[in-house]
Image (tube, rainbow, N blue to C red):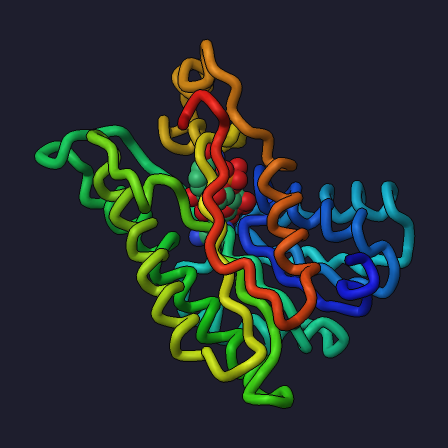
Length: 257
Ligand code: NDP
């Protein structure tokens, strides 16, 4: 698997925390030679720290570029690739991971600002990134080559009360991903979706607007997945032979079954 990933350029959105951070590290550990990784998120100082951690762990064989990006800002996304150093522009793998949940509220009480931020990040942001990267893939032989790995959620399949908007965003990711895969069927562009169940990250801290005690309570009495559990699956999917598409994977902790 490491050989197949060698030489690739990988863009991970939402790389400043949780699943994105672990995914960048897992790619670096798996293919520590001639790999280029772009770490994208809004907190660029955190990205710089992660880049340093990767360098300390795997050495200079992996080039890591921290890059400030708000996926919900169409102008930023449009100019993103051309603003990268030339050696990072030929992206092979996009991990569309940036996403969030805001609030727990029944439909009549949902804050419209929360609706906006969830849709503009989880749905429009993911579409923005896809549109920015696909032209790079399309220039390659056989109708195009490259991987888009979309991080959905169990919530896109099993909606729950109090989370209707987040669930709707992840159902939208699912429909978009399925349609895109069908549009690209005759190419070597692989469209992969990975849907996690409960994973302990900053996700719940964001959901409760920074209230750490409420976030911790979510995980009391259960054993959530770690971000590494998801990262390993992402890297496994990307490392398959080019003709093998791991299209759709649901991965959750046993208590959530
Ligand atoms: P974290 O909160 O730990 O990480 C979310 C990441 O998204 C951060 O790096 C954050 O970076 C980034 N992000 C948020 N908004 C934007 C934006 N507008 N532009 C760019 N980056 C952004 O959560 P997780 O790691 O858990 O979440 C990763 C993905 O996994 C999400 O899509 C989430 O929906 C999904 N998921 C998570 C589950 C869980 O239980 N944790 C379960 C199922 C799915 P920054 O703030 O620096 O921009």
